[in-house]
Image 1 (cartoon, one colour):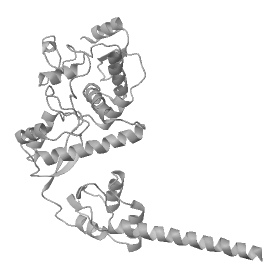
Image 2 (cartoon, helix red, strand yellow):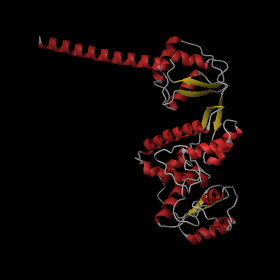
Image 3 (cartoon, helix red, strand yellow):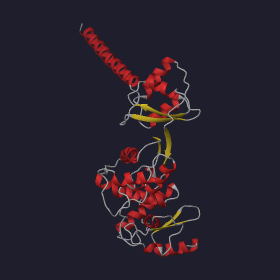
Image 4 (cartoon, one colour):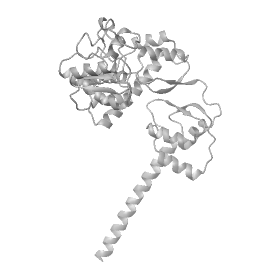
Length: 341
């Protein structure tokens, strides 16, 4: 009798858990179909390239963490056995769209003619970004720079009138889909939001609890690495040199910061260039530049957070685009002479 009761109890518990699982599955499934997209913004922009299918779009959105559940969406698509006729173009989709309206939008033959692709390369300065948005006909250079100077700063950025631009370093370099007539403020907001997303990603991947007051130092160092490193393998080594020189209270003496101080590009930094009196001239003043000198990408931000453990204090660019590193000044001078500097 007791065995019979125990068996019944076991079956009831099993049925209960099965019911809970089915209910959870059903609720999650319906939620994913009713609202498949997720974002902090009201809309997201999607580019459909030639030859891409709907699965390609789903994979991209999932990678960008803009999809509620790729699993449930794919279950729905498998059940419907639907054929897709996506058209190449740029689409702006409301994040509250149902799966059906989302698919219908991507099957619109015209796409969104008011959206353009804006690509900001890693290491671009704000002046270079301003030139790019002007050339693309999105926003005039003057209006963009005016917006940069007047924009309300995020909490992790310290205002300093000695900086060329307080937002330098934080307009994240990426490819954006933006409206042709976007104003400076909307472009800045988009790039700052992307920076915040990347910074959170960096924190999670490096398991670093980066405080707001520490962000500027990291981005400052990352901006130097971005301009100095020519190959990926040198990033953490250059980072180590920066930290080692700071620890020893040595001047950084980095050419990229001097070029930023000049405000124009030179292929070779000469002695006359080193005379410029600027808080970005790290040949003249100790410590980091007054602010970042470029807008760095994620890999350089990681390198700034996690430098290699070395005793290197010097480096010099070699003909193969790698740097030669050493902690010996005489060795450094010998290598410079050997390379013809």
